[in-house]
Length: 252
Ligand code: PGA
Image 1 (spheres, rainbow, N blue to C red):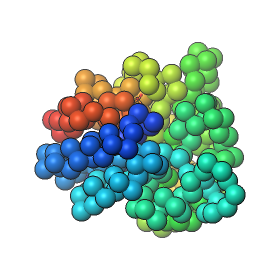
Image 2: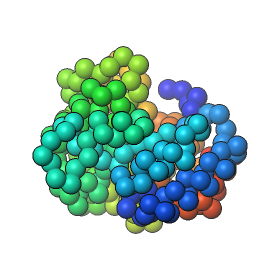
Image 3: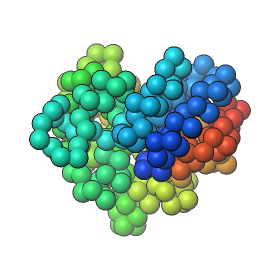
Image 4: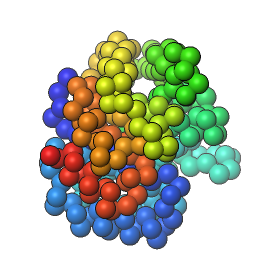
């Protein structure tokens, strides 16, 4: 696998309101000159702030993504926003199956697949999140859990030519807890993910990211792992100071 690019994806979750999202996007835009050309950056703001953030980031290389989408383009689905609607305001990416969607909102593997299918039909790029709970890790079934998530997401899928394939390995117990996964262990699971996805979707080279309590102090260790091509960062990407510390640590 090549590491021609390193991906820094920022999941702002429900941390920032409209004004805070716009302020952070403006600061990011100002700091753009410090980014190496090989660094690919995307932000995933709240739906409410999407258009305003898009407006600020227009003309920069920072891409835009949705934290979640509904698979039907339009219809009677109160409270939902479709991939088509996100695409129309400039989103190129969407997170799918984030652990908070799976475990707080009980999103199923079947729904995850429908979202992936819908994003591919729209020409958008899904970023599939997979990972085990603490209970599953303690029962020693991490690989089985991740394999089930990957199989139901990709088995038999017709992957469009030229479409990138992202998976974020995010152990549930490491997300928002401050307890990041040991980098060697993240590498071990990521290489399993890489191998399985290569078999499930032979036409594309998978891009595996690590997510879960990434900080300026540990990001360099994830970058150094063979099968980790980037990071999906939550809390630490919601402040310009820690964001730029992460950028500097990656670029070292
Ligand atoms: P965290 O979140 O960096 O705050 O742990 C990661 C994520 O949810 O993608």
